[in-house]
Length: 199
Image 1 (cartoon, rainbow, N blue to C red):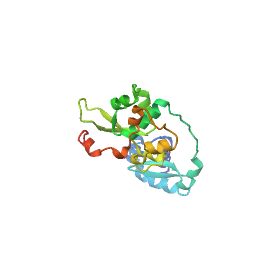
Image 2 (image 1 turned 90 degrees about the vertical axis):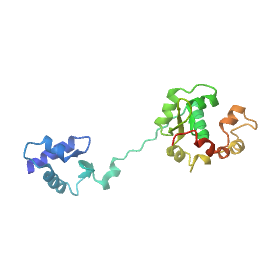
Image 3 (image 1 turned 90 degrees about the horizontal axis):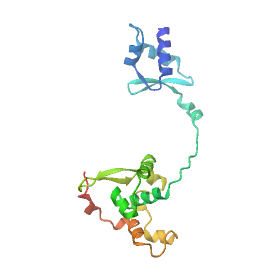
Image 4 (image 1 turned 30 degrees about the vertical axis):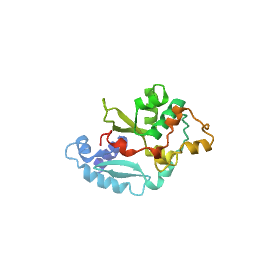
């Protein structure tokens, strides 16, 4: 049994993913009992810096929970959004669910794939329902991560035109295209849009 423990220990230590009992038995010589070896190995590692942990139906070697603070490393990563990404994000936030064609119509220029990919990668936007119009284009909506980052409970808490003007972020008379892009979310009728999207 001691030799079987060593074999199980070696496989688990070298494996990047948890390993099932069936996989252990398949690797070990015929007649070995991986399940029993795991029981003995678990007892041997009790109270140590690493331990044997069952995740689902598989087993892995993991750092002891009370020592996890030793493994943490905090880094600050600053990622600056391009102007195109900021504009695209604002349009999605204020007009969600919105298609790529609608974003381009509001911005007046085409939206590059890289801009949308960057926002998707940051998990600030995600794909919404498909619009029930010819071609059934996909829509974009903001995510919970976006709301958390900006301290919003929902997209309805985004500042309206009045708040943006009072903060000095807009002139008293914004261009028509900008006014449309920042239209008051609260005035939109969700009921009128429901029939345009898949459930």
